[in-house]
Image 1: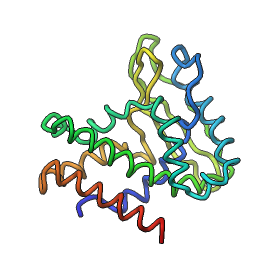
Image 2: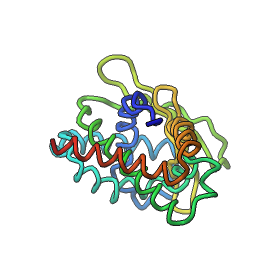
Image 3: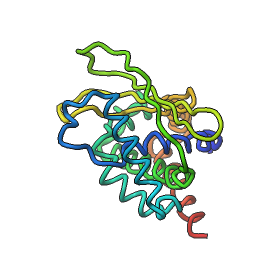
Length: 213
């Protein structure tokens, strides 16, 4: 399998960054500055995670429920998946695109399920935003502060009518979409788009089996 297992260990750190999305946006989200949105949601969700024993235990069903109801409203997941697949996205049929989104989402959710259990006493430090007032795409830079060295977590965000949306994450200096794009391109080159879908589906199936055992 060409998908890099070592990257998935690194990807566990994305849980803290995506955890910042586990609280549904408030009514003021459409006018909220991107850095303020990340700061507010980060503080709110860390409190929620620390109080939720099921999430801390890595309960996949509970994490899936969180993702569907809380994360998706704050993420442009279609753009995230299309960017990860790269130029091959346009070659995929609508059905293949839907399956890619579903399997990619499931894979990331299972990563969060294991990583959320690692949330203990961390806090989020949001760095000053470097952006012009009219910018519609920005990078919000943060650090997770806890035991050990701070963990770099940056967000690529775009402005929409509903407010700011996240479409990529930088974990410890590695942009998630770029890393997956390289791995997905290798898989598509070897086995085609259906081959990538099958690989993701098998990884998710294996992950589900490991969770039950």
